[in-house]
Length: 213
Length: 221
Image (cartoon, rainbow over all chains, first blue to last red; front, side, top):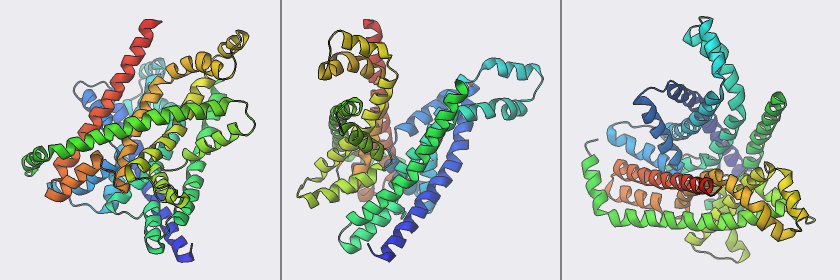
């Protein structure tokens, strides 16, 4: 593979990582918000959120990105490819993260919450000082796992023409008539990036297991 | 939003194409799931077995697959196989990619369930004279597969979602059909919403199936 081709791939890798990080930064807090909404068990809202999460979790990213990019303009919302890509991945991440946060909230000891109530803490204070630190620790390994899943589905955004790493490799292949070398370099970069997240997740899991013992 | 009634009209006209896409997605996902399940079992057996090099090879393959995006793997299979003189049409290349990729995930989740299995089960099986394949099939697999049912269901949903990636190698499944219809008539909202709802229906079906299996297992205990 030539040097310019390699630079093209690195540029694609930067796009992949940029889009992924942005989507994670948007999807994770949104997921937490949805989980907190469900924690309140509000009538009407709760089943609506549950249905939205179930729908998004069942939707392939390829289909969702096509929907976001091609359908939004028909209701007057013209958005650039990059924004459509981030919105799609963030929506998927939101749905998965909602379930993760919800699991952590369900496992959260109710008595601590009641103790905080008894001490007269306000809602925001209870959340910030008592609930969040603990559910964050419980949810962290699963959240990191979800980040690796997001990077693995990120090539879906190539179908609307965002030049992330996989599409960069396809482009190189179209010029050289041999896509395999570019795909293999691509593979090495993905394995390096995702491998880092997997190792981080394993360390967090070991730490959690040690703390529980 | 004005265009939605028109979109629904177009979809109704083109319902045969949408239905073909849906059936193709069901067929591809079902074939991929059965084959990935069988290959996953073999990989799992190799991983926990005592053969000299095989456990390492199987574990290496599983770990590699878990770090690779499905779409890239799909391209590698599609463009890579002809180099070895294997020419498959798009559909079979897609099913092969789906099988190899998801088999690794199946093997890994079976291994997870196996690790949670109490050691006494296997020891009792050994004491009763079970060895090798018979130990695996009669003693290890029944509890492992049963406890992995919810996760196998999740993987089935993942296979359905992965099958949408096959649109990139022009396999004519559900997303392909929705995209064709939107390209021909410019009704993106109706066609993709319809596809999304159909995917949702499939996944709810899988979840219902998992619940039914768990209920049946509970009733038989």
